[in-house]
Image 1: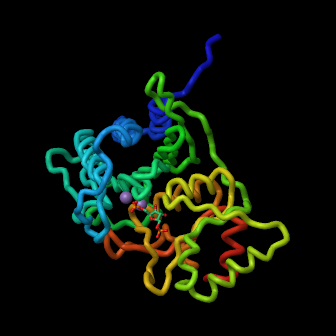
Image 2: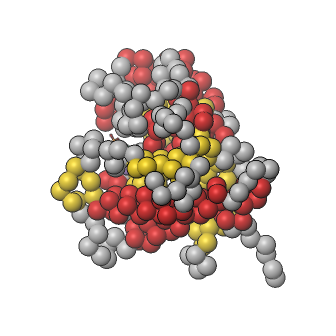
Length: 317
Ligand code: AHG
Ligand code: MN
Ligand code: MN
């Protein structure tokens, strides 16, 4: 029997055709990100076999340890996006300064967290890639509301590509036998509530009282919540997107701005969650409306199911 499958490329092309002025540029750009993701996925699978794991001994611009697979993913994504000819600038969490691509005047700027959750490399646990795309502008520091598209790739038990170009969120699963991402989760909607909370509660003593009050309150509810924490934003947000609940990386007394980067991690995820019918908040403010002060700015974040964020905001705004 013939079953019609929709590939990611076909889907992106159809999405782009909705715009009268479409030139195929957006499709080319996303296809290069898709190709890079497939290569990263194949390398991740081999980490136990080849000498690509382990630390390089270097630290990234944020003084965090860089691991080899981080560097590999970073270089690959920068190269492939540059070669697509569709971007005028690429900025990556791992690189101090954005790269302006002079040889062409592509229409888009692209932001990456090339490997999210990279501390999971050595223990064979899920990682991801996050991307965020804007129209070319003189200043790269645009608010998240201006994103043209955003998404992530999750390297889990299977590889998924989840993205939105502002008309809903769709998920594609890599079929390794044909090497293509196939539409598997059309029009993803986040449940309006969910009993999962995800936060690094090991930092409890550093949290402010209002956050402690909120966390204590959900623990006292008749029907208990479940804690889940993968130490990989992509994995943790992916779970919340499908099962509902709340993801938090708040400020604490040692990190007043939290840990996650507005442009590389928070805005793409907040965009997706909003497109899926959920909410995101940075201490009561819409993160997508923040005008970034720098490309590497960090902000506290809570995002997830609408009702869970509303509950959280009763304590934290
Ligand atoms: P990255 O690997 O890109 O540096 O990101 C790791 C981030 C994020 O994915 C995760 O939510 C968070 O760090 C975990 O931090 P803690 O170890 O402080 O909980
Ligand atoms: Mn990250
Ligand atoms: Mn990273």
